[in-house]
Image (cartoon, rainbow, N blue to C red; front, side, top):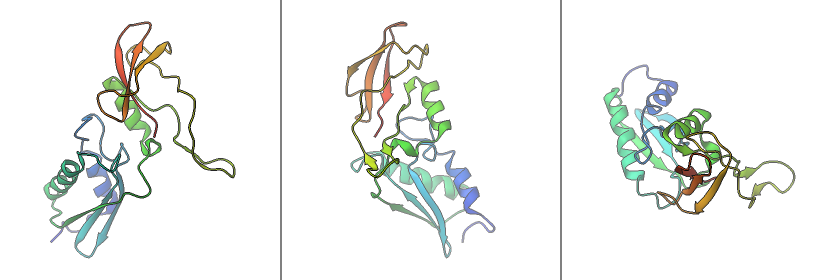
Length: 170
């Protein structure tokens, strides 16, 4: 039996407290992994989309979602993994991007999906102008296309000289 009177808005709020296991300052909601919350009879159905199809953290995220809802009295939780549409950094919240920056990771600075014109879709763009999350300087340089994880690139600030990760737009 689930907690009586629980709304999907409450569930969304509770899930906003579930940290991403790889970047603990951002919630799975702010990262855009949680795509839907619904009730199906006595089951709370949470739909999640991995940041990429082989994401090793998805089992941990699923378990964390279930544990968080169980702690709130929801006993029947069903996790649905959805691969399409593919996750995009466009699904990150502004609060999530601010949390990344505060943690020392430059957030994505472009939209991945071009929704203008007749040729909407994913397009290759010029390298972004990434500001240093430590000092705010726009004088940065790409060091490596791959940072601490495949979804990040490694940059260095030419002013404060600190290296930092940039969460790539995708």
